[in-house]
Image (tube, rainbow, N blue to C red; front, top):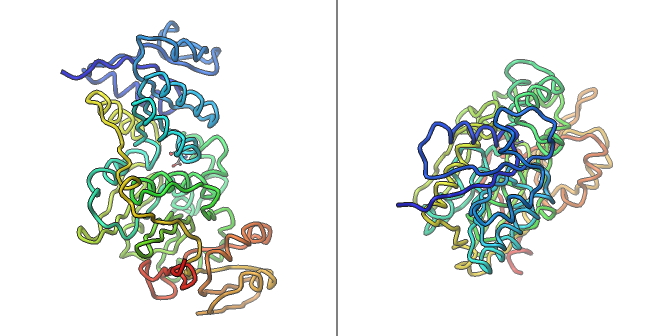
Length: 412
Ligand code: HSE
């Protein structure tokens, strides 16, 4: 018989309601005892005695043995989750930014207090990727983990590419559907995908990387010339986070728009769907596909974590413990497409080699090889110039396997 879970739920937004809907249809050995909300005046679909605005009513209630944290305030979420873990309560959270920013502390708290924090719903909504990276691929050598990790930006790209909808209209729809973050810059700028990538990399490679150290460029500067260029070549543009093991010692992480061709799995990942490609040494390529945002899809992942807590499941962070010191590096070379106006940007980026260069009226682009550190160092300049950068392996006729650690980094 599994342990009865008495749940204190923080947040009753899109995911909280989605979770509640799912739980209602099941006869599980669990009960939502209390729901903490921010806005007491908002009309709720459940009896008012279930709600409180006082977080202590949940955190100090000895009957509540499990906290489910689904709020969108990063620092408040961290306080709630760390207090819960420190007081013997297990936690399920979907706050990717909070988890990515505080992963090291959260792992320590779990060890110190013997409590469990599960967060499948924080990465790619309904796709069960974290537990698979942690358990199923425990003994696999993973060459790379990449994909589409953000539903809102993918929704905007699909609406624009397939239906000709403007960026603003598509973003508004993603917000109305409850996919987008409170600050949509997180979605379209590649930050949300980066937080998810950092979490996935901890389970894939055992590296705990600070999000600030990981390069991300989003789709804000995507222009009509870029879309036209992709269409002419039968390519699509997707926002793709990549974690790649470079050799036995180095792992690289970055988030960039990417040209994808019709043979690639990601080509057909549209709207709020996400996809995760795991390239493994023995299993070879595997693809996970599912809804990456929305109340019910994310609620289903949260419920799966809650159910796992009933039999005492904990992440062991096996690869972090086992690893022989994989180091995160930005010192890698990769091929990019750069659409730009300002020649000084090209100079600043210091291309290692140029594969193709094009000028015509107001459209100029370069496809060339570059050190990622060069992009990192010029991130502000790129944004200021309104330039669009994309990972361009398809255009240079090569693939992800050609991302290389530089000799300098390999020698470290
Ligand atoms: N804003 C996120 C997305 C929600 O669009 O993917 C799910 O994490």
